Image (cartoon, rainbow, N blue to C red):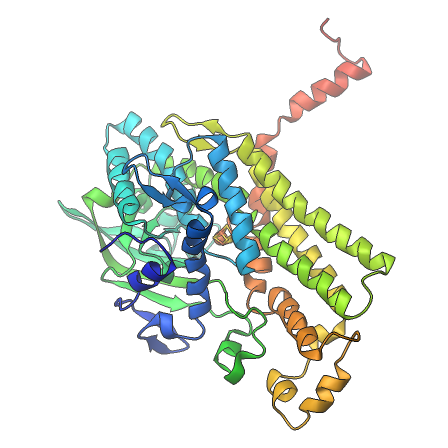
Length: 484
Ligand code: SF4
Ligand code: FE
């Protein structure tokens, strides 16, 4: 294999693989050729494209190979590195209007750097060395890594070893001298089919009875025993309709799949945790700390939706109305709140024991909490500005080719000099982002990705020192004495 340097070499690298993928009952031979899957491949490819166009933003130098690599593979060595990750994510959100799928691997890598180091420190193991060797290999070829964390979970009130079906959390089913075999399933895995490797990780705090579930390891996505079942997105079959008139976003979409592991082998050299159950919560916490501020990606996607809302206001001839201007201000305020809390978290990072940098946990959780709400409010205002047509437009075939085409173009016209086709296109984009395919990326993923809303509230409560705040109040009110 040659090093991937751009979009085309990336596309070549994932062609002709023997992945077992099911979509609507069909075994997919070549995902790149499938009209529903292809837009997600294009979104991932954009991460390579940006590194060519803006190397300062989207690439970095590998400390292991000394060569240029994609920033998504880079271990953060400073707060500036963490901030640049966010800048790149916002940019890619603006360019694709969807989930470009590559941050999970980046955040998993950064978490594993410090966690493997700390496991070794306690247990005299060699996971950090294994991990750095693996990372070096990834850097050498500039590959895409997916992070596979979310188990299917079964009964949420029970720990893995208490479940009736013991496979609802990924677990080790066999140990040999050379490695381990794992079984289980990971749900809604972002970009897995567009990756080269994935790293499996536990999804929650484990107990001493869960040692078989305490497994972290790297697996090539085409390993024997893996099956992918492609996740459907609202309106995804529009990509299969003639003319693709109604897709909204002409180029890009996200990707999630269920991954089933049936006795998949992980050799010793690709294992980064094996039974050290007490480190599972540290790994989950560090991963989510990185990942929750990675959700500034949604401020980039929000930029697109704000642009679409402003455009439809212009096409409808109402852009000068004061309440429209005010709604656009509100959308921007909400969107910048997401970005501001994310970059504040990055800029207040600190060094770990292994020497890489981790962003601030409290602010990362505040960022993600905003993402779970503000995107929906921005989406609501976008639909407000779009008007009811966003939910009732005739099909693209009727509009462009059908018997009534000329009538529809006449009656769907807005402002003079703006043609009806453009008005319909921008409405379709708003539909795509708030009701259609990319509403999965902009809304549902904003709600549940990197942990559902309550998970952030729990973490915010843990991180805030309420006693200290009470102390401030008590001093100023004279309940307790101020020190001089
Ligand atoms: Fe990256 Fe955002 Fe997609 Fe997560 S949702 S992988 S942070 S683009
Ligand atoms: Fe995600």
